[in-house]
Image (cartoon, rainbow, N blue to C red; front, side):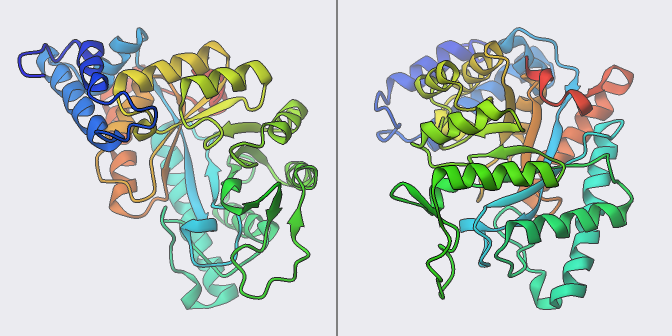
Amino acid sequence: LVGMDPQQQAQIDQAIMDLDKAHHRTEVGANAMLAVSIAACKAGAAEKEVPLYKHIADLVGKSATTLPVPAITVINGGTHAGNNLPIQEIMILPIGAKNFEEAMQMGSETYHHLKDIIWEKYGSDSCNIGDDGGFAPNISSITEGLDLVIAAIDRAGYNGRIKLAIDAAATDFCVGKKYDLEFKSAKKSGQNFKTGDDMIEIYSQLCSEYPLVSIEQPFDKDDWEHSKKFTTLELCQVVGDDLLMSDPERIKRAVNEYTCDALTLKASQVGTVTEAIEAVKQAKDAHWGVMVSHRSGDTDDSFIADLAVGAAAGQIKAGAPCRGECLTKYNQLLRIEEEFGSEGVYAGENWRTTAS
């Protein structure tokens, strides 16, 4: 890489990819590759003397003026918390905010009201947090978690302006071809093994009873059949995480088979900035939603904030308004919005179509 032009991101990334031709980046490793790729991207922006998000927008071939809607984690479960809740995250989307700053205010106020409600209902020892900063009360029912969040939204005074989303991370509780909703319980009843069709019924009921607008990874990563069945119902946004793994071939198959209609973009799954941009373009060409996402155990680097703006993603998932590795992304987005001034546009109600 020595002597290469940092503004030629595609050439740099190709040189990095040539060092590791393994499909899953097992030789050099995706984390090492991504660190170098991001460093080159930042160097390119510095050489051009433009903000990082503007440089990324130039690489994408778009203008950068849109701030994404944050999918803010408020409750953790699944493998990200020590409670009995089977799904990994319950999130809130402040789509009714007038700008990103107000969205974060709405999200933070709701988060703190939720803490008070959990304290009142379950006691002070129930306010521990999970891997993404969401609270982890010892609940086992998805509806119980959603009811807590609805109560917090109501107490904060944001009814109708905040929508709900969940990350089921169903691969974690898939056993064979069934789904074990008690996979974390020491005292299993054996009654909570669900078929894919049972899960479709559960999700459909949740969509009818709650302002639930997005479900991430509702089925196992290889359960294309039920993911397609559910997506076809068009009850909410269906986001592919493990199903896609930001892999171009899996995205292509999902587009052709209509097995989801949104992409979770995790840069560390692909390994380079160029591949991340290509995944966004692939999703946009299919008129999908795009949710740029952090990882649990992430660092306090804020690159994905600039990526979400530069790629006009419309959605960003960076955890709770808690923990430094989450806040650094949100704070960077606040700085970007300040820099935009009157030119900045908050995705808001257009949180899905912004990506098209």
